[in-house]
Amino acid sequence: MPGSVLVIGSGGREHAIVRQLARSPLQPSIFAAPGNPGTALLARNVALDPADAPAVVRFCQNEGIDLVIVGPEEPLIAGLADHLRHGGINVFGPGAMGARLEGDKEFAKEVLHAAGVPTPRYQAFSSSETALDHLDTMDLPVVVKACGAAQGKGVAVCATRGEAEAFIRECLDDQRFGTSGLRILLEECVFGPELSVLIITDGQDYCLLAPSRDHKRIGEGDTGPNTGGMGAFAPVLLPEALCEQIDARVVLPVLAELRRRDIPYRGVLYAGLMLTAHGPTVLEFNCRFGDPETQVVLPLLRGDLYDVCAATAAGELGGFLQQFPAGDSDPQHWAGAGLSEWRRRCVVVVGAADGYPGRYVNGKPIELAADRDDAWIIQAGTRDAGDGLVTGGGRVLGAVGMAKDLERARGLAYELLAGTHFEGLSYRRDIAAKGD
Ligand code: GLY
Image (cartoon, rainbow, N blue to C red; front, side, top):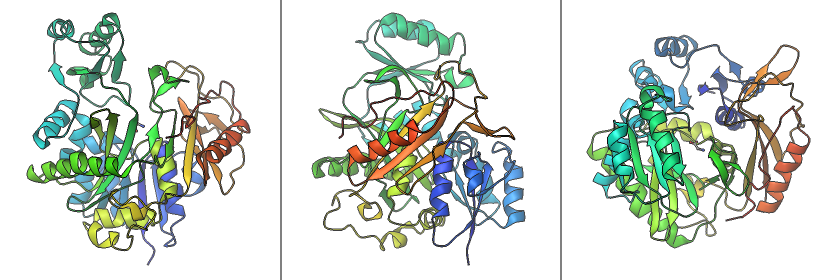
């Protein structure tokens, strides 16, 4: 019997999840709460507030929802998955204990240390005076992080002492991030290419989705302030030895440490890695799918996203994964390699509003290029104005291209973006340009 699934959230990540669910041969009924105009093309958008857990539980019980997939971190950190599980609903997403890995960066560091997983050295502070004293003992550049979740804006890589001092004061004195910034980490800066690894786990078994690379800075050549992500590609093709290191040095010990602490985890754990000269090191954890990584990782799935999420939510991932043995040409040391397609490449380029990640103006009419089989638009910050689509966020949309080689996939994404218009549309021209 076809199931029914509710996707929580309203961004590009959620449109990408809904798009993938809509391709399921099971043809589940799909709901999105609150969704966006992109999800409305494939699902029924429901005017539910993800922060109102009792209302979400009631909706699921009344509609007979079989599975909830929670997109953003805020409702997970607030315990929405716990409320749903108590209400008898299967959920893809960790409870509040697991989501603390994203909601409390100091806690994540403690878990990493206990697990013996490489991560940059750090110290935590609640007072700007002591933080500034410690800053004087650190090499530049230095990384300053708000401990709480701050919608991707709570991290600054500071090249000068002045920049670091300004960000420390914004967090601790001016309370720019509210309670999320009342405790901060000062962290050593490490160097190398970044890698996003999405670990699907039910707490016992796990698999890794195709590795991807986000482009976090606003400017070409990785310049300017950090954003939520300006584009991504997948898979990043890695040497077998590195796949083995990621598994042995990061994934296995972290999952074992969660079990040792009796922290249940059913969902996706996103490990943000830096591939340093000394091996992979963990920069951060997120308790949900990456955005925009999801837009390029899900189209590469060989399996059905509905099945993957339902098996994870039910604690039956191990049995499910047996259907997807790795092929001879798949990476042999990438756990769950058989679940992803490695001979295709997928690229997303984010089209942002002029001014993002600073101030920008909403309400600009949007003209979308038509989707094709190998290139499509994922909507993020869009709004239905009644008489047409208008901008309604900083990252407005993503153009996705998929092809056998990276260059062609990039070309498809950029072609689609060239046919998409709104006043102030801006995007990086160098997404995936460096290849692997
Ligand atoms: N792409 C970065 C994130 O999802 O946090």
